[in-house]
Length: 450
Ligand code: FRU
Image (cartoon, rainbow, N blue to C red; front, top):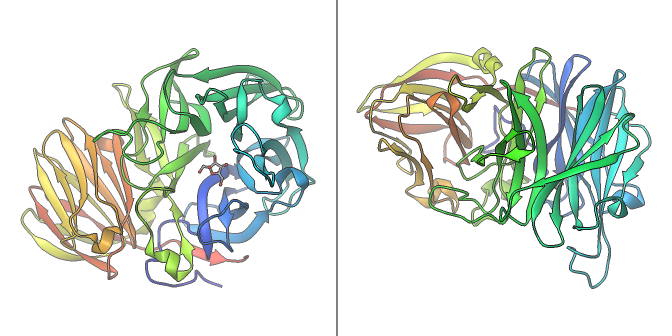
């Protein structure tokens, strides 16, 4: 069966055929395929708590198969949800580690009592069927200063040892990560906690990796202070450059409305790829696809590199160029109907303004890039997001049927948002910039499972 059609169905982004999607999970390359698992609630359009893992696979990021729900909560230790986790390939086998969420019924605050968070391991020879679940860590195994919120194991191998990082909330409501070490992936020894004073009450979905000679700790903190240009969403997501155990200044991954809980992995050619949830929960805006039976999607895969001056850059996966079809150009001062999806690039020279359907304005004044919905007809409650960027050299816009990912200055800053135009094309007007690019073909998506 081919991809289920419907208004606002994305053509470049992975979506659930029905129901709810959130975090990407278990990203890996295994036996000739990329595997992209995700938090999935096919029967609950609002997510609820009882999540499963859905599964997509692809040999090339272009041709995808959705094989359905592959990991569901079915043991006492994950009875309220198979929450987020990651994959590691060891001895030729895919090993998945995830959080078994347990919510007791009763009068609990679910912070210091009433919640269980178990690290569970399963293995797979094909990414579709899994071994028996083994519970490796329970709340009693975490340091005594932890609240019940400990989750989202991410694994890696380094110098012949395995490491696992978990996101946590302490009893003093400090966000932190916990690092464990193992020789065999079964017995885990607590090594250390990392945190920053006064930086949110909970850190979710941690990741630690090297890119371009830099080590980064990526986390999705909850409870940061919101300002006009920083941490503008309800929950944030970014990384600390690391110097030994010292955490440098936090940089947000994305400055748009819809981005959270990214995870990275290494492609077989060595590229460090990041995929995030192109969504947000609990904020004041909505998604009209919910009325049509599904909600949310993942970002396109982004390649991470480091510039000569040490900045972390994000850029769309290189294979995207295979989807380019007819060329498109919009001159300075011109308005044009452009079919979705498309990719448009332009060299920035001072300030500019790009408008879509007279409802969404992308402006730059030489200091701040602004994404502003000027009419609610396409924004569904989204208003304005600002991103400080001095000396912006260029802009690259990847527009899908109902989302935009905007890469500024070679990928130094990124803004992602959902937008819901009435038609499969937009009226694009450009002032102060010449945009050139392509219409894009859609990915091939086969839905094989539920
Ligand atoms: C982040 C998160 C994770 C958790 C999962 C549950 O969006 O809250 O911490 O494992 O979603 O779906």
